[in-house]
Image 1 (cartoon, rainbow, N blue to C red):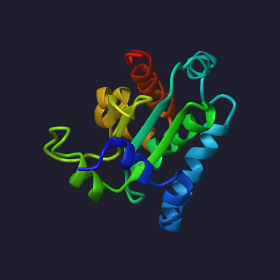
Image 2 (cartoon, rainbow, N blue to C red):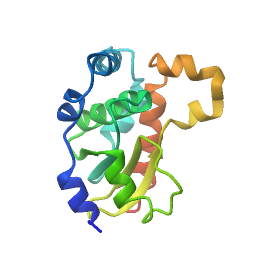
Image 3 (tube, rainbow, N blue to C red):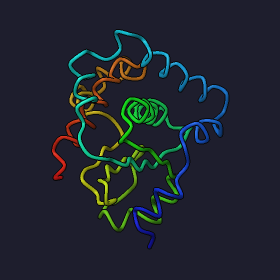
Length: 168
């Protein structure tokens, strides 16, 4: 069984991951990137929280380009790593996650994206699975807005909560 450090080091960079997608999948990622780049996309309070992240975090994401949840949320992970110099991202396939993480994390199945938040020593301090809490709480009623990229800040807030509660 590989260590989290080994898995992170063998993970794929975001742009390499995106480049393996079909044209429509790549286009969906580009739309999310455009939404994140808009000045009003992220509130000033959330931007401040991003700047205030202390410590170093490594995001190890199990993801596939065909997955709409991955197209949305892994793009948000890339945004976070671009916004903060102490946040890194590496992406692995769902198959590798099933081989390396399913049993270790005691999961019945791997839902994607599965994002492990690792601290500076590559120890798991939290996880994000599939969709942000606001979307899970809203159920099917919010799914169209979520798929249209209206819950990007919710994903960021969920990850910030994990960073902020990590033990130094």
